[in-house]
Image (cartoon, rainbow, N blue to C red; front, side):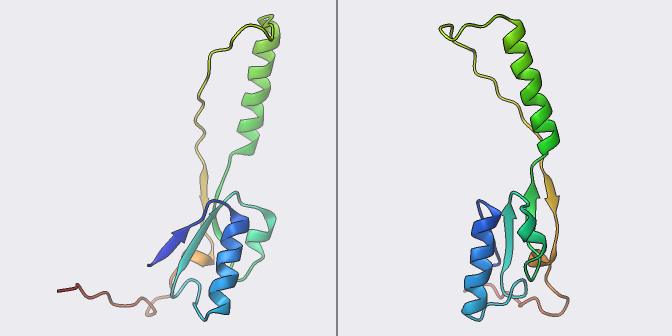
Length: 111
């Protein structure tokens, strides 16, 4: 296994801690990427590579949608149409996913 993508940063930091306790070097032996970009992820060692939500856009869209609902006179007893909105996240690259040159293990094909 070269790397793991973990569901959130809190779990990714736990993976990094467990790896360290078992002698697995991050990122030389195992790359780790989280999701959320919590504050702690930048201060762990090595700093965690993570996916960041666009929280400002998410908040803006949420407020716009609430205003539309209020202005439409929607009543709780009326069903609402489901809506899907896609936001583009950002990859925040830090040291937990960057292998140092010369440390990459050679992979030989199995026979």
